[in-house]
Amino acid sequence: MSNPRKFRQSTALLLALSLGFGTTLPFQGSLLQPAAVVAQTNQFPDVSSNYWAAGFINELVNRGVIAGFPDGSFRPDAPVTRAQFAAMVQKALPKSTNRNAIAFGDVPSSYWAFTAINNAYEMGFLSGYPGQVFRPEQNIPREQVLVALANGLNYTPRNDTNTTLGYYRDSGSIADFARSPIAAATERRMVVNYSDLQQLNPKRNATRAEVAAFIYQALLSQNQVQAINSPYIVAQDVVAVDYRINAGTIIPISYKADKILLMRDETAPVTLTVDANIVNNQGVVLIPQGSEIRGEFRPSGNGTRFVAQQLNLPNGQTYSVNATSQVITETESVTRGMELGGLLRNAVLGTGAAAAISAVTGDRAIATEELLIGAGAGILATLIPQFLGLNRVDLLVVETNTDLDLTLNNDLVLRVNP
Image (cartoon, rainbow, N blue to C red; front, side, top):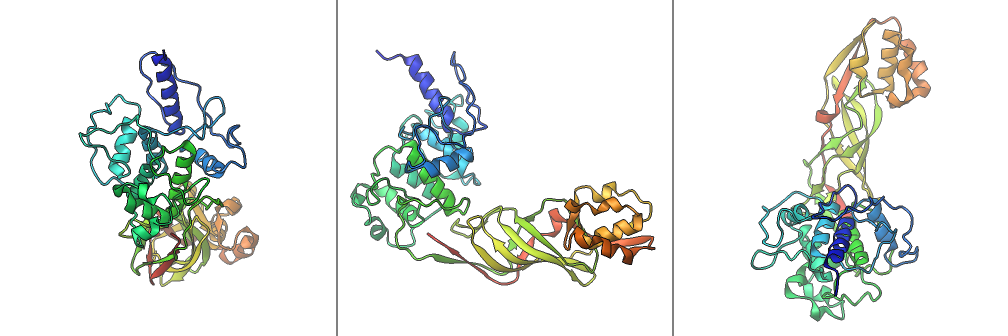
């Protein structure tokens, strides 16, 4: 007869490892918490370098979405429960909620995945069954994983559903509720079929390796990761779609420092970071958070403004972009003998501003290379003499948290591969 306690311990351990790193699993009763699992950057003994899902698995382990077991294994062919998948998907693809949590009768507040299940439900990735139950311990079939990802990301088919699903020899086995979402997932190359591309196996329980592949491809569809070269990704010949972001759209920006100090006539190249996803009304992420925008500060009237020139997406795509910040005219005076600590705290300096400060205050240490943008330290010494003898200089102060959001001046057309 099986040992119930041993089963509970094994199940709890598997669930804990499904959560990824930084998550604490509340064990009940006399269960002992296993040794912490460390992020693995090397290969698992049961995931060889030529294993079909090795790339997907290793990338998600490095991102902390999934983890290996204390014995160093990954167990790629093990099934995944609905609770485990909820923990994975809400961690891999966090998004704003679009509905309120409900009280599932079979998910008490003491259950290890209570919060993860509520998060996945509120984000729209997972739903329950009739009678307000979730069935957290039930293994999740492949079609449910794909439906959850497509629905949670608000994907709908661009082409005829039956035509798209006709690619699969077993398309007749796909449940009615799953047909449209799976078609949408197929168009966006989220379906990974090993080893037969045209065999979907929608009713078969998804394995840990398959869930890793599906989630990774979902991240790719959101431009959050680099593409992995795998022969098992279903990539139908669907034409890439052009999306237009209208002129006047605001792009929120962040920067590594709180402020930038410039001379009024100074031009300085800077790379800014997109601070939030830019999405269309279908929920497609067109410009992901973390994308880079390269451009320069240019004199404008009595101030300066940032002029964007190039958009670099995380997937390697680049676009020319015409966007500008507001004109910034706020100034702060530097005088001989003043204390510079407050002015320079968490600030970067244009080369001209650094030269002016150095000349007026006599502080040659201001030429720290890490503080400079623009022409750089190489010509700083040649600029200092023009400011010598001055007792005061006025600098433009760019407050990066409030001054640098960009406005598109022209429509921006982005090509998104399905």
